[in-house]
Length: 368
Image 1 (cartoon, rainbow, N blue to C red):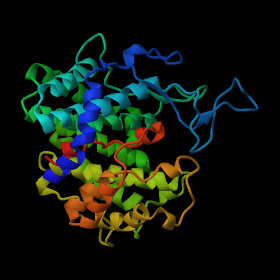
Image 2 (tube, rainbow, N blue to C red):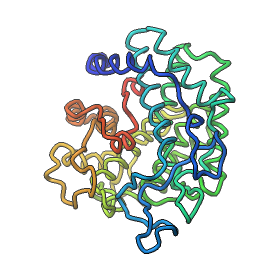
Image 3 (cartoon, rainbow, N blue to C red):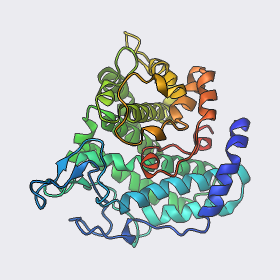
């Protein structure tokens, strides 16, 4: 842990010092002109949907893997900014005990989850809409993966007595409401049942948010789903993810799904009751499990030229990064080479697509 603190200290402090001078900004700062919701409703548009050349004013059509730059992304950018700044500020407080960092992180949390004038509504009913097709989809729930490390920061601040109960309780209530929506609304059910990384990210999110609210029933349900649904349907016997390999960004999606799976294991290991159910070492009868997934993917992170599948249609050169799967899995499973590989990779990127698909940036928060 000491080694990690020294490794990350320069980048964390530099970033946090910059963020101290930036005021919180939530989704209420930018109104989405095509949203059917109100100013407190998150809105985004499906990434891979474009105008139909044969019918420019009609319903959009899909071009998998190719993001449409004209889509509305301001709310997503605000959420990503929250997920970058609050964990960095919290990590800086851990490193220095300087309360300025924790207090500024709290300003962001109050703006997003407490203050009536700026808070976001606890649902994603209008996420990843498609012009002329739908006002929102279950697919859009993946946008709130960026709350996962924010929740980890909240836990660290709470344990450090830096988050007063008067602020913590409404934040917990917000996430309890969101978990209720995720587990009961048709869009939430649709995303839960998605076969690829979307289904994985649903479990990761519910596990994260239920951990904050101490929702034992949902935590148990996430552990069960991981073992009985996600591993059997998403992982091949060799440890690969066939549904991700079949996409137009097979390398990036394989990395993303492995990170989501590893982060879910880390969350559920840290959550109440985690010691009784060790997902890191759980295997199916044929040997599929987290060790098998890392054994498959780590060589292609170490040497991407060995990747046996097609190159991604976009951003192939931007990967890999410091993937949390290497760090979390390396420590949990005694794979020291994976930890060393993690240290050798880039911690940060200024490419928006990479930032959007890289949701664990402050490992200090996860190894407390």
